Structure formats: C-alpha cells, structure tokens
Amino acid sequence: MSGHSTYVPKTAFGRWMDARLPIIRLAHDSAVSYPTPKNLNYMWTFGGILTFMLVAQIVTGIVLVMHYTPHTTMAFNSVEHIMRDVNWGWLLRYFHANGASMFFIAVYVHMFRGLYYGSYKAPREVLWILGVIIYLLMMAAGFMGYVLPWGQMSFWGATVITNLFGAFPIIGEPLVTWLWGGYSVDNPTLNRFFSLHYLLPFMIAGVVGLHIWALHHVGQNNPDGVEVKNYAKDTVPFTPYATSKDAFGLACFLLLYGYFAFFMPNFLGHPDNYIPADPLVTPAYIVPEWYYLPFYAILRSIPDKLMGVVAMFGSIAILAVLPWLDTSRVKSLRYRPTARIFFWIFVVVCFLLGYCGSQATDKAVLSLGGRTILDIAGFGLILTVYYFAYFLVILPLLGLFEKPKPQPASIADAVLAKAAH
Amino acid sequence: MAEHATTEGTRRDFLYIWTGALGAVAAGSAVIPLVSQMNPDASTIAAGAPIDVDLAQIPAGQVVTLKWRGKPIFVRHRTDKEIAESKAVQVSSLPDPEGDAARIKEFEGKAQEKWIVVYGNCTHLGCVPISNSGEFHGWYCPCHGSHYDNAGRIRKGPAPRNLELPPFAFTAATKVRIG
Image: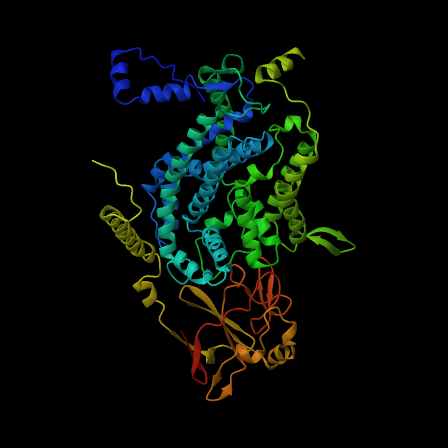
C-alpha cells in the first residue's frame, strides 16, 4: 500500500547495491518512508515492542544455552549453576524468564487492541490469522521453556499438558506416548522440548516476517477504523513519526520489564519450581504460568475431559475465524457504543477466567450460611459461556442490530475534529 | 513445432505423473524415521522390564508407592472393613461402573481381595493422588479434585475413568510381578 518506492540512493555504493540486491530500498520503504496513519495512538507501539521482545528472548536464550544441560539429572543443577556461577548468569536468566511474561503482556495488549479497533476486518484477515498463529507458537514456546529448568512445576506442568492429548479417542494414548518418547514425562521428553524450544522462536520470527509483510501490503488500521484515502492528508512517514513514538513506548515498557527483572524476578514464577522434579510427588496445586490461566480455567470448568480440551483449544481457534463472525462493517468500537460495552465485559471475563485458573476448583466464590452456592468450577463455566457467546452470538448479531455512530469521512477529518475540541 | 490438440495422455504426461508419484513416495518414506524416532527407544523399553513386589512387608490399611516405567504404582493392603465397603457400592451408580471383583486378581483360583494394584496417576491429567484421603478414603487428587475409593474407582470429580490397572500377576501368595 506504500505505493511505488521513493528511495533514491545517494552514494555510489548505494546505487551499486540497489542494482544488485535492493535491500536498502526495502529497509527504506518499510521503516522510513512507509506511510502511517496520522491518528495512531500508543496502542500501536506494541508491534514494535513485540519485535524487540522476540529479539531479546532469542539473544538471552542463545546465551543461556551455552550453560544449560538438557538432561533430567543435570538440568535443574545447570540452571542453578547459571544463577550462581556464570558471570551475569542470574541477570540473563531473569531477563529471559521475565521476558516471556513481558512478551505475553505485550501480545495481550496487542490482541485486545486488534479486537477493540477491528483490526481483523477486511482487508486484514490474513494479517490477523498470522497473528493467531504467532500467538499459538508463542504458547508452545513458553510452555516448553518452562519445562527446561526441570523443577516440580516444570515436570507436573508438562505431565498435565501432554496428558491433554490423551483425551482424544483412539489416537490419544499412542499420541501421548509419542510425545513423551517413553511411558511418562522423562529424559526423552526434556530433550525434545529443549530442541523444539530452540526451534520455535525462529519459526515465530518467520511468521512475524509474513505478518509484517501482510501489514505493509494492506496498511495499518487506526483508531478511527477508516482506511487511508489521501496519503498526503491522512498519513505521515514512519520515520521519524512512528519510529520516535515506538521508541518512547518501548522505553516505558522496558521500565516495567526492568522493574520485574531487577526488583521482583520471581514474582511471576512459582516457588515450587525451585524444587527438583519428582515423578512421585505432585505439588498441592499445579498452576500454569499466568499467561495460560484463562485457558486453564476454561479447561477445568467443563466437567468432561474431552470437551474441556476441545473448549480450551477452541477458545484460541475461534480467534482465527473472528473476521467472519463479526458482521459489522464498522471497524473501530469508537463508533460502536453497544459493542463497546460487550467488549469491556469480555475483557473483564478474560481477567476473571485468569483468576479462576489460579484457584482451586472447589473453592467457594459465593456461599450462603456456610453452603457453597457457586464454586470456582461453576463460576468458570459461566465465564466460559460468555467467552464463547461473545464470538459466536454477540458479535454476529450486534453487527445486524446495533446502530453505529457516524464515522468520520477520513483520518484527516477525524484528526481535525479532535483538534477543534 | 505444431500444437497437437489431444485429450489422450502423452508420453510426457506419463513421465510427469510417475516422477511426481515416486517423489511423493520417497518424501513420505523419509517422514517415517523422522516421526518414529520420537517413540520410546530401545533403552527406554528395556528399562521398563517387570518388577517383583514382596507383599508381606505391607501392613493392612497401608498403601505403598512404587515406581515402574517412570510412573507411580500404588499397592494397597485393604482391611476387611474396606473390602466390605467397596463391595457394598452399587456398581451402576458409579461414573465408570466396575465391580470390586474387576479390580482384583486371583492366585491359584482364589480372589486376592486384600490387594489393590493401580497406576498412581489420576485419569484426569496424570497427577499423583494422595493415598488414604478424600471423601471415599481411597485416594484424592489435589490437582483438580478427583476422589477415588479404596478400589481406585472414580467416585467424584473431573477424572473420567477409574485408576488404571497395570499388568500384574501373583507369583506366590505374597508376591506380585508388575509388568
């Protein structure tokens, strides 16, 4: 959508290179002259933040591998060796472990931003689906990474999650044995998880390449959800405008990252993971990392094992078909006051699901005279129903019945109207 | 060269199809070792050989946890009261209906009702249940709240099935071989 290239090589080397591999032209077109909508807010800085986090995870990860040993008898000790003996090892590991959490914080903001401003709607369906694929790969990478320290939560998290695949009829049991490479989670499992944990970030990087390609082909969505009509009036060049805004957003985000890594590095982890893995003792509560909690809650709230697994995977898969479930032509919820209410309920539901995932299923949420009326499992089921209803009932019907507010004629009009206030 | 409009397959079509088909077979064959290498290897299978358990050392009312093939195995010595309790349960009311007789083995034609041998992994998601606890005084799984009775049958909670029975047999009155 950036139109024809405006890059003019200024040096002799630039001209020589441009005729052979136009890579400087590509960089210029995508990161300097690329037109970005004028009205982007700070919600649009999270793509850049996520790119930074991916690079940070790959760099710290590669360095950690230089000291880590993927074997059941040595993995736990090698992580402690990193923490105690390796120069700056504690810093690198804390950056990597908290980096995973920061990565997920950023991706959730990025996803909710997409949901709010309708960034999944035509012509950005493929862009959105690529994003869902990246998210799935991130979840797989995060899960396998958490197994590597071979602590109690590593082991039991791996046991619980791999056993999910046993819920499928007929193929379930051989599939789980195949995933384990044995009769239980053991050394072969740790080895392959390590191999895949190293592979996945590069797969993510590949899909991110496609994601950015699709983005630059269709152009960015924006808070008003109206497409760019006039490049001169509606857009500004990526550099310096988006570059500096992204840099500031990233700096603020790094403060948060640094705060966790330096001042509360174990806050988001679980103390049981500092106990070496023991196949004969299950920790009192198995809790996944915080970023999986809403899905864990969906899994547990459905009493049937297979249906629980289907619902959990379905809750992510449903995002991929969202572009065709939302029937409204208006992208931004700025102009859909009714949809906005349901959206914020959805956000609250996601947080509450996260809370449910962190609690014991039989804990009382509502009790009367000492009798439990609603426990965590029941509450989780209600929230799960809303989660699916939002996509399968509310969004399809709202588009047909709601009356949206008038949208601005163009991005320039929206910006000027705001300035006039 | 003149163009020949023909619907009949040519020699070239034949070669294309065979080349493509054989290429697909070769690619498919290459996948076999790549996928199969993830299944249990010879050393893992060898380490899973049967184990012998001496039951004489387990007092009545106690549960011993063993490890076989990386998984915990519970061996429970039931008291007469426990056996009576288990037998009194109405089988049709159970989530995974199995009578007490289906949970035990025989030795020389005699039912060994005292001994329950089960895998120590909850059939929900594989956690190790806690022995002699829960509402049915059998096992209780702390992960997601499944209650099992003293025969290892699921009575309450999300687990779909009774605790699995490992392959085992009595080799003497007080000896079992697991595997």
